[in-house]
Length: 324
Ligand SMILES: Nc1ncnc2c1ncn2[C@@H]1O[C@H](COP(=O)(O)OP(=O)(O)O)[C@@H](O)[C@H]1O
Ligand SMILES: [Mg+2]
Picture (cartoon, rainbow, N blue to C red):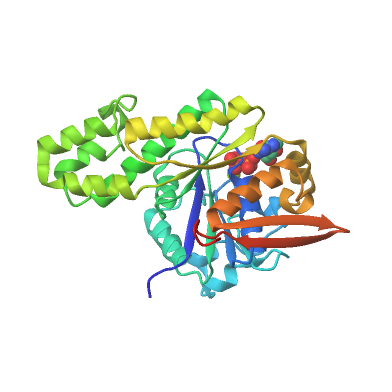
C-alpha cells in the first residue's frame, strides 16, 4: 500500500534557530487538532527533544531499530498528550551521530510505514548529506530561519543544497550530469554563483534530453519557511526576501507559511519543559503557531486554557464559493 503518512521534516542552516522547539509545538498542536502524530528526534547525536516534551530519560530510541528484534511500534514513547507519540534519539552510543547510509534507508522506510497521519521529523543543524536526505524524504519540508541577514543567507544555502542533493539522487543513473549537481566536492563548483539558470544551460549542453527531468525535480520541490524570533514588522520581510531569492536563483516556489515572535514565554516554557502551546496557549507565539497549523491543516485552530484545562476548537476552512 502506498504511504499516506504526511511527513514534515524540519531543517535549517544553523543550530539554535528553533527547529526543535517549533517541531515539538507543531506536533503538539497538530495532535490537539485531532490528527495522529509522531514527533521524531532526528538530531542524531545532539538530541534534546525529549526535554522539550518533559521526558527526562527516554527508555527507547531509534537505535533499537538496529539492535533488537523489537517491533518497531515499541519505539513509540507516550507523551501524555493524546494522539502524540515520540521517538527519541537520545543515547550514549558513541558514533550514533554518524549513521551510515544503510541505517538512513532503514530509518526512512520505518518512518514511511508509521500508521499515523503526520510525522514531524526534527533535524540537526547544517547541510550534511544525512540531514539533506532526511529533509528530502518529503518534497514539502519545513525550513526555519531567524530574521538576521546571516541566517537568511544560511537558510538560502540550505534550500539550495537540498535541491542539488535531490537532483544528484534522482539523476544518479545519468553519470554525465552528476558533476553538474553533485556537490560532494564544493570546491569543484562555485557555490556562490551556481544557480539554476547556469545548471539548465549546462544540462542542455551535455544532454538536451534530460532537461525535462531536471525541470520536474525543480517543480516538485516546494519547501515551506517559518521565520522565528521575530521582533519587529521589518523582521517579517526576511521571509519575503527568502521567497524572492529562492525564486530568482533556484526557480523554486518557497511557501512562506508564517512567523513566530521572540518571547519570554517561549524561554520560560523551555525552562519548565512544557511546550509553550500548552503552557500559554493564548500567548503571542502560540497564536502565531496556531495560524501556521491552520495553514498546514486547512483548519482554523483555536486553543483556550481555563482552570488548567485546554479547550480546542477547530473550524474547517471551506473553499471560497462554498460559504454562500
Ligand atoms: N521564538 C522564540 N522566543 C524566545 N526564545 C526562543 C524562540 N525560539 C527559540 N528560542 C530559544 O532558542 C533555543 C534554541 O532553540 P532550539 O529549538 O533548540 O534550536 P535548534 O533546534 O534550531 O538548534 C530555545 O531553547 C529557546 O531558548
Ligand atoms: Mg534542535
